[in-house]
Length: 469
RNA sequence: GGCGGGUUAGCCAAGUGGUAAGGCAGAGGUCUGCAAAACCUCUAUGCUCCGGUUCAAAUCCGGAACCCGCCUCCA
Image (cartoon, rainbow, N blue to C red; front, side, top):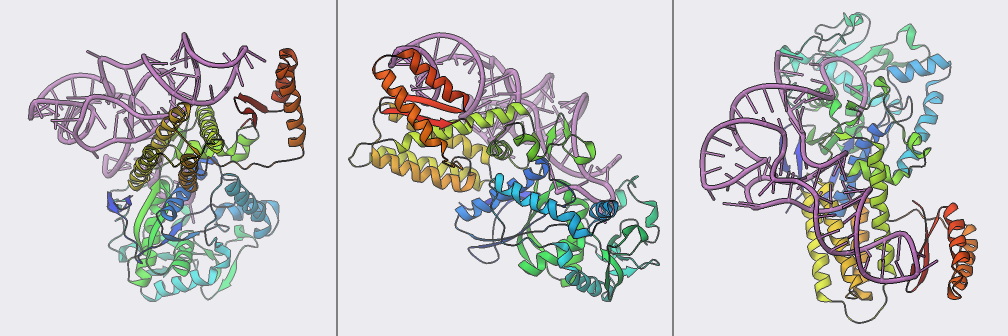
């Protein structure tokens, strides 16, 4: 069975067919670095991470591009308010973004192009569009794409321009445009832009927002590529505009599969900076919430489903991860020789098949997790019954680790430090106390360690310990 | 007004015709010095509501209610 994705343009589940067998080229809309990304933003980036990891799990060679938007209204406003150069303003947010990616265990893409480093490519496309009559220069020097020249406009979002409500968001200062729907490819310099401008064959100014994605995706992935993703809010107008610009300039299809992630909801409303109801990753980790719990929570709801964010949900995620990790730990402690039981191999095969069937079906991670926990319970049951030998356990660990290349929630970022030796000494003291039935002393040591976030578990094979997640 | 999505147990969440996965929380039990972990049992006669199709519907069709998102630079 092949991998299927829901394609926004076709509004249907379609088999994923890459242009080059075995290889995937995908473009994922990245952050605008005018502030810290919030976990709603990361929901989309985590979906893209899942997509990337699963494609790799399925054997594809993945080339992923994620743009970094470092030039737009907000970054310009920000740097001018502070009176510092644009790149100086955006640098700390760029750094923070990559730190957050690491903390959330999001795999790095192959390319992270910045808009400010691709002005020439954007100018080139704009010139082409001017030459072909798809774009025009307004009185103030700004250049707009003429939507009337692109009949397929609206094919992605399935919106009919004539039926759109003319909203309050149409700026009054955009009177230079021939039609309200025409969008900017190039914005002429305005005093409000301050020191932010480029002198180019198009004049002095800066690029519009949409053009960066066309320029950078095509530069790194070619005129046509396999997958383009983003949040649902990008469908219209951003991705619609990308299609228009790109296809009008190349004459070939831009993207084969469009995938969009639904929004994170908090208290019944979309999480957004403009609504002020957002949490950054740092807000949560500052509360002692492990980032991996955030990862688990955001991954555990299907990406096309709105996800209601709650702290209860984070707690549930944290506990679920604890159970997965305890299970993995238990497997590593299984001893006993002999050949693997064939029934156990069957259990693994069955579980793997179930997991893959779920993920193949439009990245159904919830279903995949269900399969994983069923495997966990059955394997625990057999371990309780003494039916699992060392070979079985090794196979189970391999299986778990292969699933974790996709989920990345089981392996811990364990950092053994100098306190480990001290902890282990206390455990030895306690074992001695237990051997001589000094229960009060034993419990005292356990309490002492618990205060340090260390949890003890007495097993027939001795005492093991772990840090509280 | 246009387009789209949603409503499944205390919470979260899978499930597109065959009689409700899974996680968390809770209750009881086995094991244990105690605890933890693990396992077992229990927790939706029912999937927003009303009709309809069908031997069979959470799933298909029609209608209603409520909620969310997009409608021009917001993941």
